[in-house]
Length: 258
Image (cartoon, rainbow, N blue to C red; front, side):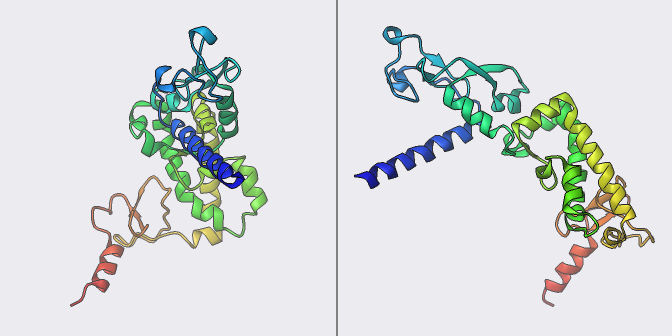
């Protein structure tokens, strides 16, 4: 009996966690009291006209009793993502705890949950080129022996998750985007990174020479004048690179039987 109860509680916990994480990027629709059988979505006690006014949680779209909903307010991440709406809304007690715990978790993949945000939200549109530059700097900054972990950590100041994936955000990050603070922080990181790579002998050795024109200069993917092949990650001058990548063509020719 105890094993079955523990297993059922675990399943219910997984379902609740899945529901809550889904609402992080998806605006919840109000379900209505009848869908809840006129019971609190948390403790299942009766709610309705005869038991006190039910309280709506804007995060889950469900109703709660007065014990499980203290009328606390918080921003709703999904409304930020889709509507760029930073207003605070009333949430249940359990939701408030969940959002507090997850607020700095980089769990929002912006290009998947709202790719049109890059077209219509000026702050995200402005920040994206810097994020892409930082992503191309990541292999150098993470592997350079001249950069100690302590120095890199000091420069990143809690933005480690910004290095690799240019589209990942936490709810807290989006608030920083709105205020222009994240743009300033990423801009400083890019300036630091590009300066280091150009001045570091180890990093410069990992640069590229444009195979198309053969010009004797070291180029990098973060340079404004370059393009990077998305297949082999080779780097070329923008003016030289068209649809055909010589590195990929060589690889294709080697693998094609005569």
